[in-house]
Image (cartoon, rainbow, N blue to C red):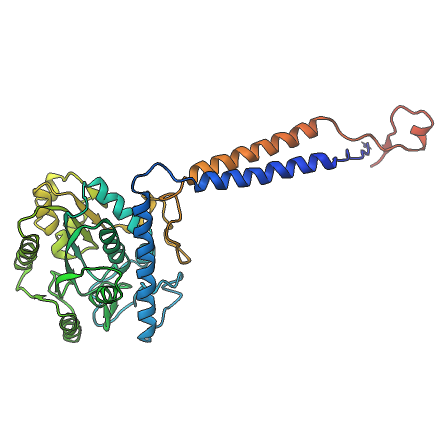
Length: 382
């Protein structure tokens, strides 16, 4: 076997400097392109809503720590303070931890702003909201979106929560929303609350759990919706919306989570698409619920369930492993353009390297035989 030994071509300082300039320039241009705001008339309000939600998240976390509650990294790796316990006396049903973690993102407030805009909601409009304690982070985001847009919400809450939601007996969702009002972060709250849970009547919960919820509703000075059955509870909620709308049209209905009366039990929950629903199927209209009552009137409904699907649609972390910063991501910035510029810069660098390589290898090493006039020096080997 014969081997020929080559000395690599010496790379000039000039070439190195040019490659460094191109690389640094590509980074700078891609970052500038990424930071360039898209032509979005809602950009400022989306950012304002997300920043308000971020502040509200911090306020709830601070209050939770003040009350001596431990934030468990195994449940809440981002340490948001908005992920509850596995099981407490006020836990109504099972919950999906990944969905709860994904929801703890202040940028969902910007998502809600976008959905409300697409639903045709404008400043001063009336918006009805049905929420439970199952997704406190989403509740915060909806409240902050509504506050930012200057609409008039009518909120009816269910006090209980599923696993990993606002299921700490001394800090239920209705306690959290009161705390946000007292801090001046939002200007409104629920007009009434039910027990929540199965059939909206806390069916299956212990007497201790029901008593704790009753105490929470009392300390927050809210009217208690306590009916005998599903149908009566549904009628009571619709009456509340009608009463507080005072003859004004409701421009949208927002459901957060899977409250029985709001969505129509587990069956009705699955018949509406996650996110904004401008049209409804005949099958969905057959299930009587708050969602259906509004949909029958042609009212747009925003169905905040299947949180991870919504997160994927808006390119939000799913689930986040660290605290999310408001205003970051493709919802606000032209991230794809930045990536395209970075990719273009990389191609230029690769092309420059290829050109340098094609100029040819270095000269062969000279030996005594070459020095004596041999054309090529070869060395034998095994």
